[in-house]
Length: 226
Image (cartoon, rainbow, N blue to C red; front, side, top):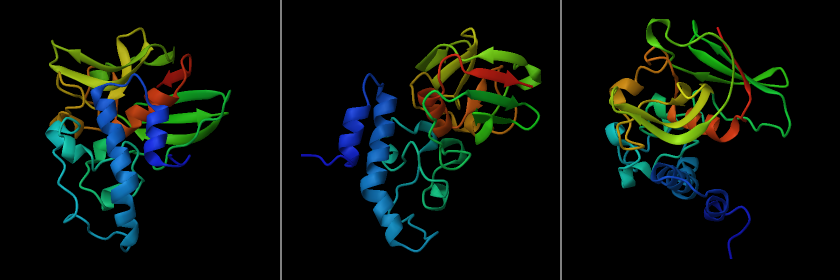
C-alpha cells in the first residue's frame, strides 16, 4: 500500500486526462523526487553531479524519454546548479506559491520589463519572466482569463506551444516557449529568447511557469497589460 506522501501515489491520484507531454513531465517529477533529489541532497550544496545526469536534449525535451525523466516540472529555484536544464525550462521566480481558495487573484503584465506578476489579495506573490509580442503586437488593456488547453500548433507559423491559457478570445494567449508540431518538442533557439519580445502577440512563459499558470490561474482572473 502506498503511503499518503508517496510520490507515485500522489501522481496517480492527481493526474488524469493528460497528454503524453504531461505524463512525461510528471514522470520527470517522479524521477526527481525519488532518485535525483536524494542524490543532490547527499552532496554539498552546489556540487557538480553532471557525471550522474545525462545532458538535456533541449531541441526535443519531453519526447526524449530517458532525458526527460531527469528534469521535473517544478524543480527548486537552485535546480540549474545541479542539472543541465536551460533557463526557459525552469521556474523563473523561485518556489511557486499556493493560491488560497476564493482569493482575489490578478495578473499584471509589464511589457517594458518583460515580467508578469501574480497578485493574491493585492499582494504580489510571484513574478515570471515573459516574452511578449514583437513590434508591440501584444494588446494593452484589461482582459479576463478564458479558455485553456494543453497544446496548439499553428501551421502558418510552424510553431505551437504547450499549456495555453487565453486572455483575449482565443487569439491572444499565455503559453510555454514554442514547440514544433509534436507537443513537448521545444524549439531551443526560440525558447532562448525568453525575456525579450519574441512572439507574434502572445505571452510566452518558461515551461514550468506555463504549466503552473495553466493549472492554477482561475478562469475569469483579471489581467492588466501595460
